[in-house]
Image (tube, rainbow, N blue to C red; front, side, top):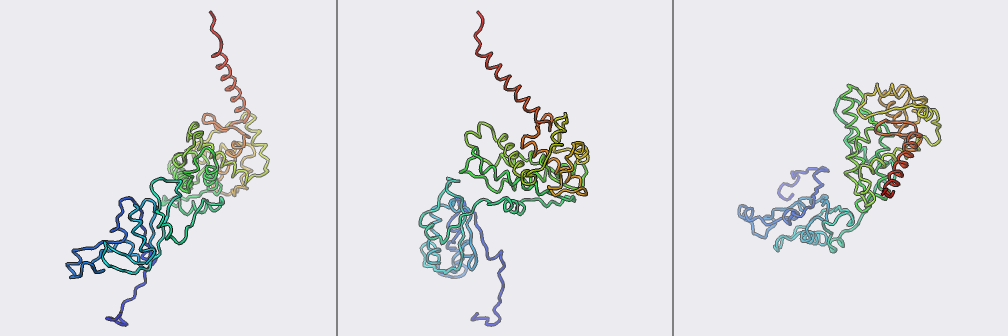
Length: 382
């Protein structure tokens, strides 16, 4: 300003220039964060070794007049955390004992998981004492908030040349899986169930629906509940099980969570609707097997044979002029909902059948187990 006066260039620093983020890892050094004396720089410039002009500054001083964030602070080595004391208390830096005093105007932000979630490191107490405010975040408090977060973060908009329509009830079922998992006693509460579960699950569901539309040559990509079952790896890989859950297996737990989630959303859309016609169709011997790879036209033609099913789609936001793929997804949602409430049965071999068949099969299995146990305890003949 003294040299150029009114000709001093003024440049607006945009948002990206005013924000610097560093992922904390055990190999991070003081030179990375704060800086170090550069003898070559001092020699070339003819500066004193203790001059601020001889310093190669790290990320934090370069974030002056901005925000500097350190992600996963407990992973930062203790001696590096100690190096932040002076910056947070006096607002300047000291480098290798040289009297380099560089006043900083920077806002420091840290992120860390709760100590129960990880044993990799900890925040040293004097550093915690210098942090102005601690803000604890939490899981989404409502299903609507969770759906909004998942929609924002998930990769749903694909450049495949096809129209992607994700029904609202499918989004809600995916989100409800996470809500049910967080309340399930078979899942470890210390590890938690992060928002990454529904995000990853939604991406897998859309990908499976996209694959089906490509194979079938369809213009619309509409996920179904069957696609949620195909995304089991996105669920099982993100939950830690307690002892009881380990006995049953992650795959069984994940399927049970999907069923609970379907029931939760189904009850919201159909609190008191009568599905007697649909149930009677199955009780009369009707059987319907659906798969995640079945083309829409074939699936919808078979769903229309179920008496009274297509007439119940309106509460799900699906009307007669909706795309066929959307109608098929809504009809399958109703069948899954009835299955979740034990109104009809479903198996991998036969698909949807009457609930009485499952009861009969269960009775036969109990009788077989009883017979085997009785024969095992019989005394052998001499």
